[in-house]
Image (cartoon, rainbow over all chains, first blue to last red; front, side, top):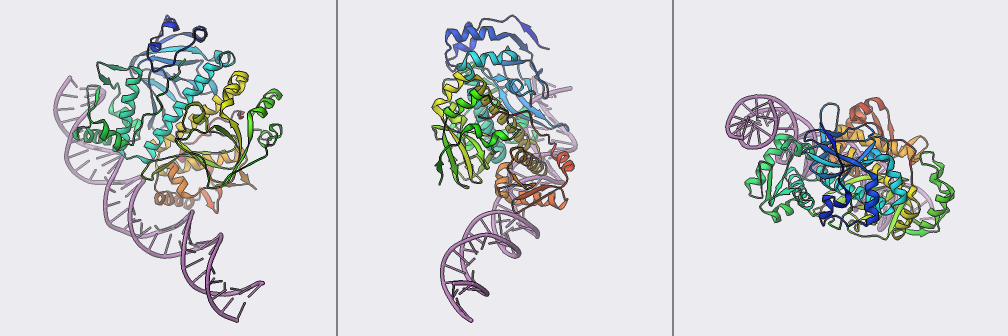
Length: 247
Length: 247
DNA sequence: CGACTTGTTGATGTACATCAAGGTACGTGG
DNA sequence: CCACGTACCTTGATGTACATCAACAAGTCG
């Protein structure tokens, strides 16, 4: 299960040390401190938000990996996106009235908890932060667009090359890695559900990539051996690396 | 080509007559009038925004159909979503610095033009409108999520049933129809590019649906003959019909 | 001038053969 | 027991090829 722990001050938020994220003004940090209502530790494998629910909270990820997904009633699952530090969770539930998707934790996660009811307050008092939220929503849209191209028009080989590159780069950017090695905390089944492929076919295709010596992936440690070939194969380009807001 | 025409007042905006859209306060309308910099008539078949560009404008659709898409350099195309009245175009370009997708017009379209540079002004002076933009971004995300499930986990038959239902309902909601008949201004090729299918397979699958007497589609006129069966087949549910903001 | 061919083009429809991806089954190793 | 690996067969979707049908333009003839 998940447990709440005492909140740490936003001013020493571990994410602020990462140059990927934009600097905040003191006033903004001050406000976010009042906006924040606590922290949440979600254990690997637990569920954070459920489709159809209308949670009273929004979350920012401070540590760990998660994933957004939807399921059909006959058991089919589609992973919509992976979630990494800096990502915002539950905005849909806050803005509309119901979550259209579920969120699960892949690793132990540390989340910052905000009251949905105070969101309006943020919009009226800190337009810069409101703008940041819009930025985050736009970026999510951009990732979804790219993912849609994968599922609709890329072959299995291209798809896999593409997500692996993307997840590799996102993991590095947000610091979710470990002595030069990127740690992928998900199984081939997760990848398959993300890419709309069967487990077996995902496995065969992954084999092809490592047989050709483009990647290595063993015991959750992932390495790219030949980025150039992989990039060309996937028609990949890393999306937007501008200084990035988060709340 | 496309031509600019004299703007009509936001207070008699045709969309406001449609109960689907939320009512605005006078102050809000007043502001939107100053935010609006004109109108744009885009002819069917023309391009409105191009991937990679950074347009100085954002648009709201007043009339007509369009589509968002991305293409790979070898000619493969993925339609990300269709665009209908009330939809916002170009937010990505305004918030990030570059459009990640292109936008094309399916029919003649009437667009409201806003200066991207004034967007910040909107955020600082009218938090309610800023919130509306976030709402629109969230709804787009919801549609994309659903579309991802289609491409990843639904069969061709289910996918087609699903988009047809969705487009039918969206068209009715926004009034883009004509004497009880819904007008679909796109070709089977557009559908194929939207659903990640080949043209031939799209055609065969559409035949199946009309052979089973679930739908009718001829000369751009679309009808649902058996909504119940179609809905069950697609695992379809119309997303969020709450009173809906637009700018 | 209007009416009647002819050619062109874009959307749709259908028939194959082919192939990429799926499903089941049964391995291994931690 | 669960994640990964591999073999074998099946199937859903693709690609090519060609036919139909309506819309439209050009040219021809009465």
